[in-house]
Image (tube, rainbow, N blue to C red):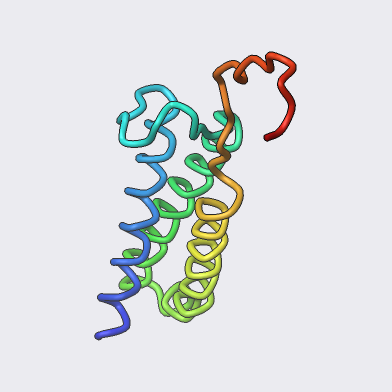
Length: 114
């Protein structure tokens, strides 16, 4: 029974993270400086994948109460959800946001280095 708590919690987190990342493309929250941006196409795809996985995992978990065959698929899908969440975390930390300098560099007046 404790497994089911973690199972449904994982897929609710995936669902909320997916809606967050997909929604941030259209309506940024403004919590980061404007120099730190994300690729909107990749973010939309991640959002779609996370939302789809969250919904599918939740439905599979609920239908597992009616069918024993679907109930036996829960642990495998739980592992898939954890792996997807880990890949998403790596994308967010290392690949998802890149600092881009949007300003102009300072003028060099030909003085050279001190």
